[in-house]
Length: 206
Image 1 (cartoon, rainbow, N blue to C red):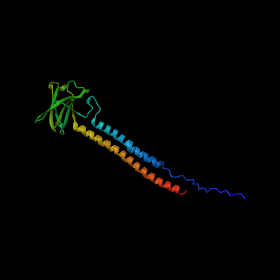
Image 2 (tube, one colour):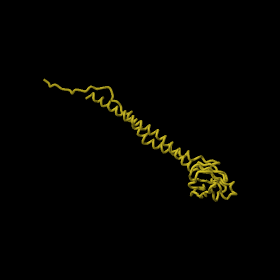
Image 3 (cartoon, rainbow, N blue to C red):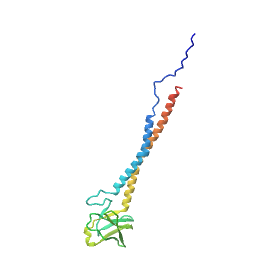
Image 4 (tube, helix red, strand yellow):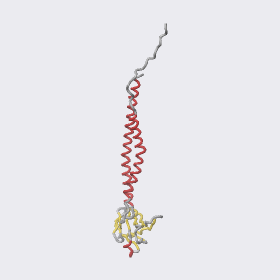
C-alpha cells in the first residue's frame, strides 16, 4: 500500500488589493516641500519685489534718481513731516551742483553736510536729526539756482516703504506656509488611516 501524500493547506487568495498609500505620501511630501522649500523662496522674492516697488521709482527724464523723492526748488518751502534725516539730492543731469545747502526756519538754520558716494554720480546734502517743521531751502551759488536739479528724499518714507514691503512679503509667504502645513497635516492623518486599513486588510489572512 502506497503512502498517502499530504499537501499543505493553501490560504484563500483574495482578488482585492490593499489600500494604497500613494495619495497620502504624495500629499505629505507636497506639504513638506511647500512649507520648507517654496515658502522661504516666496518670502525672499515677494519681500524683495515689494520693498523695491515701495522704495524705488522707475527713472525718467523728470526723475533720473530712482529713489522715491520729490522735486524741490531753492527758495521754496519744504515740509519735514517727522524728525528724521533729510537728503537733498542733486541729480546726475543737473547743470550746476550747489556748493552748500541749508534749511532756513524762523527759529534756526540747519546747514546740510555735503556727501558723495564713491562710484556714484549722485551728490547729496544731508541733515541728520532734522526736527519736523516748515523750512526754506537755500543753496549757493544762489545765482545758479535755475540750473540746480534737486530732489528731497524723506528717510521716513524710505523706511516706511521698506517696512510695508516686509509686511507684504511676510503676508504672502504666510499663506504659502499655512497651505504647506495643512497639506502636511492632511497627509499625516491620511497616512495613519491608510496604515490602519492596510493592517486590517492583512490581518484577515492570518
